Image (cartoon, rainbow, N blue to C red; front, side, top):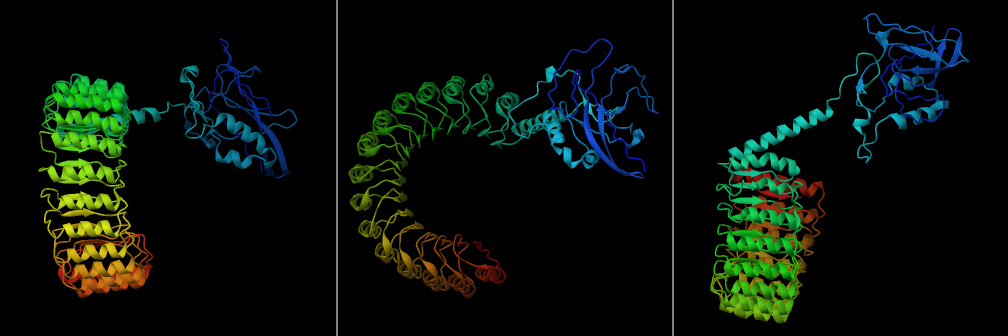
Length: 627
Protein backbone atom coordinates (compact mmCIF):
# COMPACT_ATOMS: atom_id res chain seq x y z
CA UNK A 1 0.00 0.00 0.00
CA UNK A 2 1.32 3.37 -0.94
CA UNK A 3 1.58 5.91 1.85
CA UNK A 4 -0.96 8.69 1.70
CA UNK A 5 0.45 11.94 0.46
CA UNK A 6 0.19 15.01 2.62
CA UNK A 7 -0.90 17.99 0.56
CA UNK A 8 -1.82 21.41 1.81
CA UNK A 9 -2.21 24.60 -0.18
CA UNK A 10 -2.70 28.02 1.35
CA UNK A 11 -1.81 31.67 0.83
CA UNK A 12 0.78 33.35 3.00
CA UNK A 13 2.41 36.72 3.26
CA UNK A 14 5.13 36.87 0.62
CA UNK A 15 8.65 36.31 1.76
CA UNK A 16 8.07 33.97 4.74
CA UNK A 17 10.45 30.99 4.81
CA UNK A 18 10.96 28.46 7.55
CA UNK A 19 13.83 25.96 7.28
CA UNK A 20 13.29 22.35 8.33
CA UNK A 21 13.51 21.84 12.10
CA UNK A 22 14.33 25.49 12.65
CA UNK A 23 12.41 27.82 14.96
CA UNK A 24 9.81 29.77 13.01
CA UNK A 25 10.62 33.45 12.83
CA UNK A 26 9.01 34.79 9.66
CA UNK A 27 10.50 37.97 8.30
CA UNK A 28 8.35 39.81 5.77
CA UNK A 29 10.06 41.03 2.63
CA UNK A 30 8.80 42.88 -0.42
CA UNK A 31 7.78 40.48 -3.25
CA UNK A 32 9.32 40.73 -6.68
CA UNK A 33 7.27 41.61 -9.75
CA UNK A 34 7.02 38.04 -10.98
CA UNK A 35 7.44 35.63 -8.09
CA UNK A 36 6.13 35.03 -4.59
CA UNK A 37 8.57 33.79 -1.98
CA UNK A 38 7.59 30.48 -0.44
CA UNK A 39 7.29 29.14 3.12
CA UNK A 40 9.01 25.79 3.67
CA UNK A 41 8.95 23.59 6.70
CA UNK A 42 9.35 19.86 7.08
CA UNK A 43 7.13 17.48 8.99
CA UNK A 44 8.02 13.86 9.80
CA UNK A 45 5.47 11.51 8.23
CA UNK A 46 5.18 7.79 9.00
CA UNK A 47 3.16 5.15 7.18
CA UNK A 48 2.81 1.39 6.99
CA UNK A 49 3.06 0.12 3.43
CA UNK A 50 3.65 -3.19 1.61
CA UNK A 51 7.39 -2.82 2.02
CA UNK A 52 7.23 -2.28 5.78
CA UNK A 53 7.33 0.77 7.96
CA UNK A 54 8.87 3.93 6.60
CA UNK A 55 9.35 7.51 7.51
CA UNK A 56 9.68 10.61 5.39
CA UNK A 57 10.14 14.29 5.99
CA UNK A 58 7.61 16.20 3.96
CA UNK A 59 8.10 19.83 3.06
CA UNK A 60 4.90 21.82 2.57
CA UNK A 61 4.95 24.51 -0.08
CA UNK A 62 2.18 27.11 -0.42
CA UNK A 63 0.63 27.97 -3.75
CA UNK A 64 2.45 30.71 -5.64
CA UNK A 65 1.78 32.86 -8.65
CA UNK A 66 3.20 32.21 -12.16
CA UNK A 67 6.11 29.90 -11.40
CA UNK A 68 8.18 28.44 -8.57
CA UNK A 69 11.87 29.02 -7.87
CA UNK A 70 13.00 25.75 -9.45
CA UNK A 71 11.47 26.79 -12.75
CA UNK A 72 9.16 23.79 -13.18
CA UNK A 73 5.85 24.52 -14.88
CA UNK A 74 2.64 24.82 -12.83
CA UNK A 75 -0.16 22.32 -12.93
CA UNK A 76 -3.84 23.06 -12.41
CA UNK A 77 -6.53 20.73 -11.18
CA UNK A 78 -9.48 19.34 -13.13
CA UNK A 79 -11.59 22.40 -12.38
CA UNK A 80 -9.09 24.60 -14.16
CA UNK A 81 -7.87 26.46 -11.10
CA UNK A 82 -4.39 27.90 -11.52
CA UNK A 83 -3.33 27.38 -7.95
CA UNK A 84 -0.29 25.14 -7.82
CA UNK A 85 0.21 22.34 -5.31
CA UNK A 86 3.80 21.27 -4.82
CA UNK A 87 4.94 18.40 -2.63
CA UNK A 88 8.64 18.20 -1.95
CA UNK A 89 10.44 15.70 0.22
CA UNK A 90 13.79 16.15 1.85
CA UNK A 91 16.88 15.20 -0.19
CA UNK A 92 17.45 12.02 1.80
CA UNK A 93 14.10 10.43 0.84
CA UNK A 94 12.36 9.30 -2.30
CA UNK A 95 9.52 11.26 -3.79
CA UNK A 96 6.15 10.66 -2.17
CA UNK A 97 3.17 9.99 -4.43
CA UNK A 98 0.39 12.57 -4.68
CA UNK A 99 -3.31 12.03 -4.12
CA UNK A 100 -6.43 13.59 -5.62
CA UNK A 101 -7.43 17.12 -4.82
CA UNK A 102 -10.87 16.06 -3.58
CA UNK A 103 -9.22 14.36 -0.62
CA UNK A 104 -7.71 17.60 0.62
CA UNK A 105 -9.42 18.96 3.73
CA UNK A 106 -10.37 22.59 3.27
CA UNK A 107 -11.68 25.25 5.58
CA UNK A 108 -11.20 28.96 6.23
CA UNK A 109 -9.73 30.66 9.27
CA UNK A 110 -9.18 34.38 10.06
CA UNK A 111 -6.11 36.28 8.88
CA UNK A 112 -2.89 35.35 10.65
CA UNK A 113 -4.16 31.92 11.74
CA UNK A 114 -2.79 28.48 10.77
CA UNK A 115 -4.90 25.48 11.73
CA UNK A 116 -3.61 21.92 11.68
CA UNK A 117 -6.05 19.33 10.41
CA UNK A 118 -6.69 16.17 12.35
CA UNK A 119 -5.19 13.85 9.76
CA UNK A 120 -1.90 15.77 9.84
CA UNK A 121 -1.75 15.49 13.60
CA UNK A 122 -2.26 11.77 13.33
CA UNK A 123 0.72 11.42 11.04
CA UNK A 124 3.15 13.47 13.07
CA UNK A 125 5.73 11.32 14.75
CA UNK A 126 5.97 11.50 18.50
CA UNK A 127 9.71 12.02 18.24
CA UNK A 128 9.26 15.35 16.53
CA UNK A 129 6.22 16.62 18.45
CA UNK A 130 8.30 19.53 19.74
CA UNK A 131 8.67 20.89 16.22
CA UNK A 132 4.94 20.87 15.67
CA UNK A 133 4.47 22.76 18.95
CA UNK A 134 6.84 25.43 17.72
CA UNK A 135 4.89 25.77 14.49
CA UNK A 136 1.62 25.79 16.38
CA UNK A 137 2.74 28.47 18.83
CA UNK A 138 3.81 30.78 16.05
CA UNK A 139 0.93 30.30 13.63
CA UNK A 140 -2.01 29.40 15.86
CA UNK A 141 -4.15 32.25 17.26
CA UNK A 142 -3.51 33.71 20.69
CA UNK A 143 -5.64 32.44 23.55
CA UNK A 144 -8.80 34.36 24.28
CA UNK A 145 -8.09 37.36 26.46
CA UNK A 146 -4.57 37.85 25.13
CA UNK A 147 -3.47 41.46 25.03
CA UNK A 148 -1.62 41.11 21.74
CA UNK A 149 -3.41 42.30 18.61
CA UNK A 150 -2.87 41.83 14.92
CA UNK A 151 -2.30 44.96 12.88
CA UNK A 152 -4.61 44.31 9.96
CA UNK A 153 -3.11 47.12 7.92
CA UNK A 154 0.27 45.32 7.89
CA UNK A 155 -1.22 42.21 6.29
CA UNK A 156 -2.99 43.53 3.18
CA UNK A 157 -5.08 41.06 1.25
CA UNK A 158 -3.94 37.95 3.10
CA UNK A 159 -6.54 35.21 3.46
CA UNK A 160 -5.64 31.88 4.98
CA UNK A 161 -7.01 28.48 3.93
CA UNK A 162 -5.93 24.88 3.40
CA UNK A 163 -7.04 24.46 -0.21
CA UNK A 164 -7.47 26.53 -3.34
CA UNK A 165 -10.69 28.43 -3.78
CA UNK A 166 -11.43 28.84 -0.07
CA UNK A 167 -9.72 32.14 0.64
CA UNK A 168 -12.88 33.89 1.79
CA UNK A 169 -13.10 36.97 3.95
CA UNK A 170 -13.86 36.30 7.62
CA UNK A 171 -17.27 37.61 8.69
CA UNK A 172 -16.82 37.36 12.47
CA UNK A 173 -16.37 41.08 13.06
CA UNK A 174 -19.12 41.91 10.59
CA UNK A 175 -21.46 39.55 12.39
CA UNK A 176 -20.68 41.07 15.78
CA UNK A 177 -21.23 44.56 14.45
CA UNK A 178 -24.49 43.49 12.85
CA UNK A 179 -25.73 41.90 16.08
CA UNK A 180 -24.77 44.99 18.09
CA UNK A 181 -26.72 47.24 15.75
CA UNK A 182 -29.66 44.89 15.94
CA UNK A 183 -29.63 45.05 19.73
CA UNK A 184 -29.39 48.83 19.72
CA UNK A 185 -32.31 48.99 17.32
CA UNK A 186 -34.31 46.86 19.72
CA UNK A 187 -33.38 49.19 22.60
CA UNK A 188 -34.38 52.21 20.52
CA UNK A 189 -37.73 50.57 19.82
CA UNK A 190 -38.26 50.05 23.56
CA UNK A 191 -37.56 53.73 24.20
CA UNK A 192 -40.27 54.65 21.71
CA UNK A 193 -42.79 52.08 22.92
CA UNK A 194 -42.75 51.48 26.69
CA UNK A 195 -43.20 53.88 29.57
CA UNK A 196 -40.58 52.13 31.73
CA UNK A 197 -37.40 50.86 30.06
CA UNK A 198 -34.66 48.92 31.90
CA UNK A 199 -31.38 48.80 29.97
CA UNK A 200 -29.10 48.34 32.95
CA UNK A 201 -25.95 46.27 32.54
CA UNK A 202 -26.09 46.07 28.73
CA UNK A 203 -22.62 47.60 28.40
CA UNK A 204 -23.40 49.50 25.22
CA UNK A 205 -20.95 52.28 26.16
CA UNK A 206 -20.68 55.81 24.81
CA UNK A 207 -21.25 54.82 21.19
CA UNK A 208 -24.44 53.02 22.09
CA UNK A 209 -25.67 56.00 24.06
CA UNK A 210 -25.13 58.28 21.06
CA UNK A 211 -27.16 55.82 19.00
CA UNK A 212 -30.01 55.74 21.56
CA UNK A 213 -30.08 59.46 22.29
CA UNK A 214 -31.93 60.11 19.05
CA UNK A 215 -34.77 57.89 20.24
CA UNK A 216 -35.00 59.91 23.45
CA UNK A 217 -35.13 63.05 21.36
CA UNK A 218 -38.27 61.81 19.65
CA UNK A 219 -39.54 60.08 22.79
CA UNK A 220 -43.24 60.28 23.48
CA UNK A 221 -43.53 57.17 25.64
CA UNK A 222 -40.58 56.44 27.98
CA UNK A 223 -41.05 58.03 31.39
CA UNK A 224 -38.45 55.96 33.25
CA UNK A 225 -35.12 54.92 31.68
CA UNK A 226 -32.41 52.91 33.42
CA UNK A 227 -28.98 53.24 31.76
CA UNK A 228 -27.04 52.09 34.85
CA UNK A 229 -23.89 49.97 34.52
CA UNK A 230 -23.30 50.48 30.81
CA UNK A 231 -19.71 51.72 30.63
CA UNK A 232 -20.81 55.29 29.88
CA UNK A 233 -18.21 58.01 30.46
CA UNK A 234 -18.25 61.78 30.47
CA UNK A 235 -17.80 61.82 26.68
CA UNK A 236 -20.96 59.78 26.20
CA UNK A 237 -23.13 62.20 28.15
CA UNK A 238 -22.69 64.73 25.36
CA UNK A 239 -25.24 62.65 23.49
CA UNK A 240 -27.92 64.17 25.73
CA UNK A 241 -27.08 67.69 24.57
CA UNK A 242 -30.05 69.08 22.69
CA UNK A 243 -32.15 66.08 23.67
CA UNK A 244 -32.93 66.46 27.37
CA UNK A 245 -33.46 70.20 27.04
CA UNK A 246 -36.53 69.59 24.93
CA UNK A 247 -37.72 66.22 26.26
CA UNK A 248 -40.57 66.73 28.73
CA UNK A 249 -41.84 63.14 28.81
CA UNK A 250 -38.89 61.50 30.58
CA UNK A 251 -39.33 61.68 34.36
CA UNK A 252 -36.67 59.31 35.75
CA UNK A 253 -33.10 58.92 34.48
CA UNK A 254 -30.77 56.38 36.10
CA UNK A 255 -27.07 56.63 35.21
CA UNK A 256 -25.72 54.88 38.32
CA UNK A 257 -22.68 52.65 38.01
CA UNK A 258 -21.21 54.59 35.09
CA UNK A 259 -17.84 56.22 35.69
CA UNK A 260 -18.76 59.70 34.49
CA UNK A 261 -16.75 61.51 37.20
CA UNK A 262 -16.75 65.25 37.80
CA UNK A 263 -16.47 66.05 34.10
CA UNK A 264 -19.58 64.05 33.36
CA UNK A 265 -21.44 65.71 36.23
CA UNK A 266 -20.58 69.13 34.78
CA UNK A 267 -21.72 68.12 31.31
CA UNK A 268 -24.99 66.64 32.56
CA UNK A 269 -25.66 69.59 34.87
CA UNK A 270 -25.30 72.05 31.99
CA UNK A 271 -27.78 70.03 29.97
CA UNK A 272 -30.32 69.71 32.81
CA UNK A 273 -30.08 73.36 33.83
CA UNK A 274 -33.29 74.22 32.00
CA UNK A 275 -34.82 70.74 31.74
CA UNK A 276 -38.53 70.74 32.51
CA UNK A 277 -39.21 67.02 32.57
CA UNK A 278 -36.85 64.94 34.73
CA UNK A 279 -37.99 64.62 38.34
CA UNK A 280 -35.66 61.86 39.54
CA UNK A 281 -31.93 61.72 38.76
CA UNK A 282 -29.83 58.77 39.97
CA UNK A 283 -26.04 59.16 39.93
CA UNK A 284 -25.02 56.57 42.53
CA UNK A 285 -21.48 55.14 42.30
CA UNK A 286 -20.41 57.35 39.42
CA UNK A 287 -17.07 58.60 40.75
CA UNK A 288 -18.30 62.08 41.64
CA UNK A 289 -16.19 64.30 43.88
CA UNK A 290 -16.52 67.82 45.21
CA UNK A 291 -16.26 69.43 41.78
CA UNK A 292 -19.05 67.26 40.46
CA UNK A 293 -21.20 68.09 43.49
CA UNK A 294 -20.51 71.77 42.89
CA UNK A 295 -21.70 71.49 39.28
CA UNK A 296 -24.87 69.69 40.39
CA UNK A 297 -25.46 72.39 43.00
CA UNK A 298 -25.32 75.07 40.31
CA UNK A 299 -27.89 73.11 38.33
CA UNK A 300 -30.19 72.88 41.36
CA UNK A 301 -30.19 76.65 41.67
CA UNK A 302 -31.77 76.94 38.21
CA UNK A 303 -33.71 73.69 37.82
CA UNK A 304 -37.27 73.82 39.14
CA UNK A 305 -38.40 70.32 38.18
CA UNK A 306 -36.05 67.85 39.90
CA UNK A 307 -37.59 66.25 42.99
CA UNK A 308 -35.26 63.34 43.86
CA UNK A 309 -31.45 63.45 43.64
CA UNK A 310 -29.40 60.33 44.41
CA UNK A 311 -25.63 60.72 44.87
CA UNK A 312 -24.93 57.65 47.03
CA UNK A 313 -21.51 55.98 47.24
CA UNK A 314 -19.44 58.71 45.67
CA UNK A 315 -16.45 60.72 46.95
CA UNK A 316 -18.15 63.94 48.02
CA UNK A 317 -16.37 65.64 50.90
CA UNK A 318 -17.02 68.68 53.07
CA UNK A 319 -16.80 71.27 50.27
CA UNK A 320 -19.23 69.28 48.11
CA UNK A 321 -21.71 69.18 50.98
CA UNK A 322 -21.29 72.93 51.42
CA UNK A 323 -22.06 73.51 47.73
CA UNK A 324 -25.21 71.41 47.90
CA UNK A 325 -26.26 73.23 51.06
CA UNK A 326 -25.97 76.54 49.24
CA UNK A 327 -28.19 75.21 46.47
CA UNK A 328 -30.87 74.25 48.99
CA UNK A 329 -31.25 77.90 49.93
CA UNK A 330 -32.32 78.73 46.36
CA UNK A 331 -34.04 75.52 45.25
CA UNK A 332 -37.78 75.31 45.88
CA UNK A 333 -38.51 71.95 44.27
CA UNK A 334 -36.20 69.26 45.70
CA UNK A 335 -37.93 66.71 47.94
CA UNK A 336 -35.35 63.99 48.56
CA UNK A 337 -31.54 64.02 48.73
CA UNK A 338 -29.53 60.80 48.97
CA UNK A 339 -25.92 61.21 50.10
CA UNK A 340 -25.30 57.80 51.67
CA UNK A 341 -21.74 56.49 51.65
CA UNK A 342 -19.87 59.74 51.08
CA UNK A 343 -17.36 61.66 53.21
CA UNK A 344 -19.34 64.55 54.66
CA UNK A 345 -18.17 64.16 58.25
CA UNK A 346 -19.13 66.57 61.01
CA UNK A 347 -18.27 69.67 58.94
CA UNK A 348 -20.30 68.45 55.99
CA UNK A 349 -23.30 67.78 58.21
CA UNK A 350 -23.01 71.22 59.77
CA UNK A 351 -22.88 72.87 56.34
CA UNK A 352 -25.85 70.88 55.13
CA UNK A 353 -27.80 71.87 58.23
CA UNK A 354 -27.60 75.54 57.26
CA UNK A 355 -29.02 74.83 53.84
CA UNK A 356 -31.80 72.67 55.30
CA UNK A 357 -32.75 75.38 57.74
CA UNK A 358 -33.59 77.79 54.92
CA UNK A 359 -35.31 75.23 52.68
CA UNK A 360 -39.04 74.51 52.74
CA UNK A 361 -39.37 71.77 50.13
CA UNK A 362 -37.11 68.99 51.49
CA UNK A 363 -38.92 65.91 52.80
CA UNK A 364 -36.31 63.11 52.89
CA UNK A 365 -32.67 63.22 53.95
CA UNK A 366 -30.42 60.17 53.50
CA UNK A 367 -27.01 60.52 55.17
CA UNK A 368 -26.18 56.89 56.00
CA UNK A 369 -22.45 56.21 56.41
CA UNK A 370 -20.93 59.69 56.45
CA UNK A 371 -19.02 59.51 59.75
CA UNK A 372 -20.97 62.42 61.16
CA UNK A 373 -20.33 61.64 64.82
CA UNK A 374 -21.87 63.28 67.87
CA UNK A 375 -20.82 66.83 66.94
CA UNK A 376 -22.09 66.50 63.42
CA UNK A 377 -25.45 65.11 64.54
CA UNK A 378 -25.83 67.98 66.99
CA UNK A 379 -25.41 70.53 64.20
CA UNK A 380 -27.64 68.58 61.83
CA UNK A 381 -30.45 68.23 64.37
CA UNK A 382 -30.25 71.97 65.01
CA UNK A 383 -30.86 72.64 61.32
CA UNK A 384 -33.65 70.05 61.12
CA UNK A 385 -35.38 71.53 64.15
CA UNK A 386 -35.38 74.97 62.50
CA UNK A 387 -36.46 73.55 59.14
CA UNK A 388 -39.62 75.28 57.94
CA UNK A 389 -40.79 72.33 55.92
CA UNK A 390 -41.88 68.83 56.89
CA UNK A 391 -39.16 66.17 57.06
CA UNK A 392 -40.79 62.73 56.88
CA UNK A 393 -37.70 60.49 56.54
CA UNK A 394 -34.32 60.74 58.25
CA UNK A 395 -31.57 58.17 57.65
CA UNK A 396 -28.55 58.73 59.87
CA UNK A 397 -27.43 55.11 60.25
CA UNK A 398 -23.79 54.04 60.50
CA UNK A 399 -22.53 57.48 61.53
CA UNK A 400 -20.63 56.75 64.74
CA UNK A 401 -23.37 58.31 66.86
CA UNK A 402 -23.09 57.47 70.56
CA UNK A 403 -25.29 58.05 73.57
CA UNK A 404 -24.53 61.79 73.49
CA UNK A 405 -25.65 62.02 69.89
CA UNK A 406 -28.75 59.99 70.78
CA UNK A 407 -29.70 62.75 73.20
CA UNK A 408 -29.94 65.27 70.31
CA UNK A 409 -31.91 62.79 68.20
CA UNK A 410 -34.32 62.29 71.09
CA UNK A 411 -34.90 66.04 71.32
CA UNK A 412 -35.80 66.15 67.65
CA UNK A 413 -38.19 63.21 68.04
CA UNK A 414 -39.94 65.13 70.79
CA UNK A 415 -40.40 68.24 68.62
CA UNK A 416 -41.12 66.83 65.17
CA UNK A 417 -44.71 66.65 63.96
CA UNK A 418 -43.96 65.14 60.57
CA UNK A 419 -41.25 62.45 60.88
CA UNK A 420 -42.51 58.99 59.86
CA UNK A 421 -39.31 56.96 59.36
CA UNK A 422 -36.16 57.10 61.49
CA UNK A 423 -33.03 55.03 60.87
CA UNK A 424 -30.34 54.86 63.55
CA UNK A 425 -28.99 51.50 62.38
CA UNK A 426 -25.38 50.54 63.23
CA UNK A 427 -24.48 53.34 65.57
CA UNK A 428 -23.52 52.89 69.22
CA UNK A 429 -26.20 54.57 71.30
CA UNK A 430 -26.20 51.72 73.88
CA UNK A 431 -28.76 51.26 76.62
CA UNK A 432 -28.50 54.90 77.74
CA UNK A 433 -29.28 56.15 74.25
CA UNK A 434 -32.08 53.63 73.83
CA UNK A 435 -33.71 54.81 77.05
CA UNK A 436 -33.55 58.45 75.90
CA UNK A 437 -35.09 57.55 72.57
CA UNK A 438 -37.79 55.50 74.32
CA UNK A 439 -38.81 58.41 76.57
CA UNK A 440 -39.44 60.67 73.61
CA UNK A 441 -41.26 57.97 71.63
CA UNK A 442 -43.81 57.95 74.43
CA UNK A 443 -44.86 61.44 73.36
CA UNK A 444 -44.36 61.07 69.60
CA UNK A 445 -47.40 60.28 67.51
CA UNK A 446 -45.98 60.28 63.98
CA UNK A 447 -43.07 57.80 63.72
CA UNK A 448 -44.29 54.48 62.32
CA UNK A 449 -40.90 52.88 61.50
CA UNK A 450 -37.82 52.99 63.70
CA UNK A 451 -34.57 51.12 63.13
CA UNK A 452 -32.36 50.67 66.20
CA UNK A 453 -30.47 47.62 64.96
CA UNK A 454 -26.77 47.20 65.71
CA UNK A 455 -26.62 49.73 68.55
CA UNK A 456 -25.23 47.60 71.39
CA UNK A 457 -28.56 47.59 73.19
CA UNK A 458 -29.02 45.03 75.96
CA UNK A 459 -31.99 43.78 77.94
CA UNK A 460 -32.40 47.02 79.93
CA UNK A 461 -32.55 49.16 76.81
CA UNK A 462 -35.10 46.88 75.15
CA UNK A 463 -37.20 46.86 78.31
CA UNK A 464 -37.41 50.66 78.13
CA UNK A 465 -38.56 50.48 74.52
CA UNK A 466 -41.07 47.74 75.36
CA UNK A 467 -42.71 49.89 78.05
CA UNK A 468 -43.25 52.64 75.51
CA UNK A 469 -45.25 50.27 73.29
CA UNK A 470 -47.94 50.05 75.95
CA UNK A 471 -48.84 53.65 75.24
CA UNK A 472 -47.62 54.03 71.65
CA UNK A 473 -50.01 52.63 69.07
CA UNK A 474 -48.33 54.30 66.08
CA UNK A 475 -45.14 52.25 65.64
CA UNK A 476 -45.75 49.42 63.16
CA UNK A 477 -42.16 48.42 62.28
CA UNK A 478 -39.52 47.84 64.94
CA UNK A 479 -35.98 46.77 63.98
CA UNK A 480 -33.80 45.54 66.85
CA UNK A 481 -31.50 43.09 65.07
CA UNK A 482 -27.80 42.83 65.95
CA UNK A 483 -28.38 43.84 69.56
CA UNK A 484 -27.40 41.41 72.38
CA UNK A 485 -30.77 41.61 74.11
CA UNK A 486 -30.75 37.92 75.11
CA UNK A 487 -33.70 35.88 76.40
CA UNK A 488 -34.44 38.40 79.18
CA UNK A 489 -34.79 41.28 76.76
CA UNK A 490 -37.06 39.37 74.40
CA UNK A 491 -39.16 38.26 77.38
CA UNK A 492 -39.93 41.88 78.38
CA UNK A 493 -40.70 42.77 74.79
CA UNK A 494 -43.00 39.80 74.20
CA UNK A 495 -44.91 40.34 77.42
CA UNK A 496 -45.95 43.76 76.13
CA UNK A 497 -46.63 42.65 72.55
CA UNK A 498 -49.05 39.95 73.72
CA UNK A 499 -51.83 42.45 74.21
CA UNK A 500 -50.40 45.91 73.50
CA UNK A 501 -49.05 47.93 70.62
CA UNK A 502 -49.66 47.78 66.89
CA UNK A 503 -46.32 46.36 65.77
CA UNK A 504 -46.71 44.48 62.49
CA UNK A 505 -43.05 43.87 61.59
CA UNK A 506 -40.61 42.79 64.29
CA UNK A 507 -36.98 42.04 63.47
CA UNK A 508 -34.91 40.25 66.11
CA UNK A 509 -32.18 38.59 64.06
CA UNK A 510 -28.78 38.02 65.70
CA UNK A 511 -30.12 38.93 69.16
CA UNK A 512 -28.81 35.90 71.10
CA UNK A 513 -32.23 34.89 72.39
CA UNK A 514 -31.64 31.09 72.21
CA UNK A 515 -34.25 28.35 72.81
CA UNK A 516 -35.41 30.08 75.99
CA UNK A 517 -36.16 33.27 74.08
CA UNK A 518 -38.02 31.22 71.49
CA UNK A 519 -40.38 30.06 74.24
CA UNK A 520 -41.30 33.69 75.02
CA UNK A 521 -41.83 34.46 71.34
CA UNK A 522 -44.00 31.35 70.93
CA UNK A 523 -46.11 32.36 73.91
CA UNK A 524 -46.56 35.84 72.45
CA UNK A 525 -47.74 34.45 69.12
CA UNK A 526 -50.61 32.62 70.82
CA UNK A 527 -52.22 35.93 71.74
CA UNK A 528 -50.83 38.62 69.45
CA UNK A 529 -53.12 39.68 66.60
CA UNK A 530 -50.99 42.30 64.81
CA UNK A 531 -47.62 40.69 63.96
CA UNK A 532 -47.41 39.77 60.28
CA UNK A 533 -43.62 39.56 59.79
CA UNK A 534 -41.23 38.03 62.32
CA UNK A 535 -37.48 37.77 61.76
CA UNK A 536 -35.63 35.44 64.17
CA UNK A 537 -32.53 34.63 62.12
CA UNK A 538 -29.30 33.47 63.71
CA UNK A 539 -30.48 33.18 67.29
CA UNK A 540 -29.29 29.64 68.03
CA UNK A 541 -32.86 28.37 68.40
CA UNK A 542 -32.03 24.78 67.45
CA UNK A 543 -34.64 22.03 67.42
CA UNK A 544 -35.99 23.00 70.85
CA UNK A 545 -36.75 26.53 69.70
CA UNK A 546 -38.34 25.29 66.49
CA UNK A 547 -40.55 22.86 68.43
CA UNK A 548 -41.74 25.70 70.68
CA UNK A 549 -42.67 27.85 67.70
CA UNK A 550 -44.38 24.89 66.04
CA UNK A 551 -46.73 24.56 69.03
CA UNK A 552 -47.84 28.16 68.50
CA UNK A 553 -48.40 27.62 64.80
CA UNK A 554 -50.90 24.88 65.66
CA UNK A 555 -53.04 27.54 67.31
CA UNK A 556 -55.19 29.55 64.90
CA UNK A 557 -53.14 32.62 64.02
CA UNK A 558 -54.69 34.87 61.43
CA UNK A 559 -51.93 37.51 61.43
CA UNK A 560 -48.44 36.02 61.01
CA UNK A 561 -47.68 35.58 57.30
CA UNK A 562 -43.86 35.56 57.20
CA UNK A 563 -41.53 33.69 59.56
CA UNK A 564 -37.76 33.76 59.08
CA UNK A 565 -35.81 31.04 60.93
CA UNK A 566 -32.64 31.02 58.83
CA UNK A 567 -29.20 30.31 60.41
CA UNK A 568 -30.67 28.72 63.54
CA UNK A 569 -29.04 25.25 63.63
CA UNK A 570 -32.40 23.57 63.16
CA UNK A 571 -32.28 19.89 62.22
CA UNK A 572 -34.82 17.33 61.06
CA UNK A 573 -36.53 17.12 64.46
CA UNK A 574 -37.45 20.79 64.29
CA UNK A 575 -38.45 20.45 60.64
CA UNK A 576 -40.80 17.55 61.48
CA UNK A 577 -42.44 19.61 64.24
CA UNK A 578 -42.99 22.57 61.91
CA UNK A 579 -44.37 20.27 59.21
CA UNK A 580 -46.87 18.72 61.65
CA UNK A 581 -47.95 22.17 62.77
CA UNK A 582 -48.68 23.22 59.20
CA UNK A 583 -50.72 20.08 58.59
CA UNK A 584 -52.64 20.36 61.86
CA UNK A 585 -53.64 23.96 61.29
CA UNK A 586 -55.08 24.27 57.79
CA UNK A 587 -56.08 27.85 58.49
CA UNK A 588 -52.54 28.94 59.27
CA UNK A 589 -51.79 32.34 57.77
CA UNK A 590 -48.07 31.74 57.19
CA UNK A 591 -47.29 32.16 53.51
CA UNK A 592 -43.49 32.35 53.75
CA UNK A 593 -41.26 30.14 55.90
CA UNK A 594 -37.51 30.57 55.60
CA UNK A 595 -35.33 27.71 56.86
CA UNK A 596 -32.25 28.44 54.77
CA UNK A 597 -28.78 27.73 56.18
CA UNK A 598 -29.95 25.21 58.76
CA UNK A 599 -28.97 21.54 59.10
CA UNK A 600 -31.93 19.86 57.40
CA UNK A 601 -31.45 16.61 55.51
CA UNK A 602 -33.63 15.48 52.63
CA UNK A 603 -35.99 13.83 55.14
CA UNK A 604 -36.76 17.11 56.87
CA UNK A 605 -37.14 18.88 53.56
CA UNK A 606 -39.51 16.21 52.23
CA UNK A 607 -41.64 16.44 55.37
CA UNK A 608 -42.03 20.19 54.98
CA UNK A 609 -42.72 19.86 51.26
CA UNK A 610 -45.45 17.33 51.91
CA UNK A 611 -46.96 19.61 54.56
CA UNK A 612 -46.97 22.49 52.09
CA UNK A 613 -48.72 20.34 49.48
CA UNK A 614 -51.25 19.15 52.06
CA UNK A 615 -52.18 22.72 52.98
CA UNK A 616 -52.63 23.58 49.33
CA UNK A 617 -54.84 20.56 48.69
CA UNK A 618 -57.04 21.30 51.67
CA UNK A 619 -57.32 25.08 51.47
CA UNK A 620 -55.63 26.11 48.18
CA UNK A 621 -53.27 28.31 50.18
CA UNK A 622 -49.71 28.47 48.94
CA UNK A 623 -46.81 28.39 51.40
CA UNK A 624 -43.36 29.27 50.14
CA UNK A 625 -40.73 27.30 52.05
CA UNK A 626 -37.07 28.17 51.53
CA UNK A 627 -34.32 25.69 52.29
